[in-house]
Amino acid sequence: MNPENSPVEITNVSESPKKSKLKMLVREIFIFAIIAFGIVLPFRLYIAEPYIVEGASMDPTFKTGDYLIVDKLSYELGKPERNSVVVFKFPEDPRKSFIKRVIGLPGETVVVKSGSTTIINSENPKGFAIDQLYVKNTCTGTEHNCISSYQKTLAGDEYFVMGDNRAESFDSRSWGPLSKKYILGKPVLRLYPLNKIEVVPGTYKK
Image 1 (cartoon, rainbow, N blue to C red):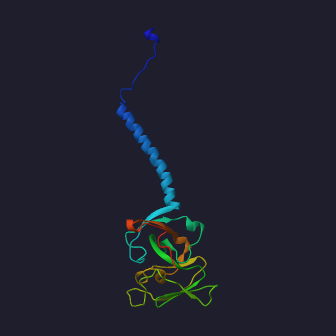
Image 2 (image 1 turned 90 degrees about the vertical axis):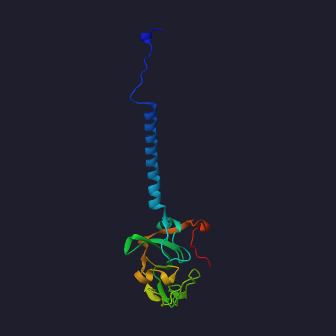
Image 3 (image 1 turned 120 degrees about the horizontal axis):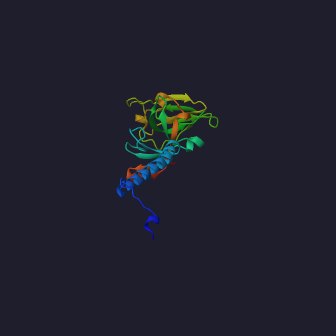
């Protein structure tokens, strides 16, 4: 074979095999980051997001350090039910998030008196007392900052929320009804502590 007619192969001596592999690795990481960002960000914004409980307002149902996954889609499609647990933006400072239990529904009148809670609505014009088995610390009025008497009629998009630890909860008794627009979602999973892993934690059980 004539050497002059043979195919010529050249190698870029400035780009070593190690540099080529590094470029490929960086490219793969970049592509992975874009894909992950495109999936994780919408997931956290619209579907579910992790939260860590701080404070004693929901004792003993939830305690400081509980790691929760909050479903943010359900209440976009539906409405909270009585006794369900909700996570929401604090109306007076939306940078803060609270966790409480729904007690009063839109259009109802909530009457709190001496540790008991009564609901007045169209189906029950004389009112009915809420079964509060999840409440361990009631509010009698002797506790610090505890509001034992309160009455409020809710508007068409308002909910009345209270903490399970009534004696130490900063809730609708203090700052009024919660508009639905501030509700973020509901806890669907407790991942920590490990001995309390639970699906839909805080569900009211009669």
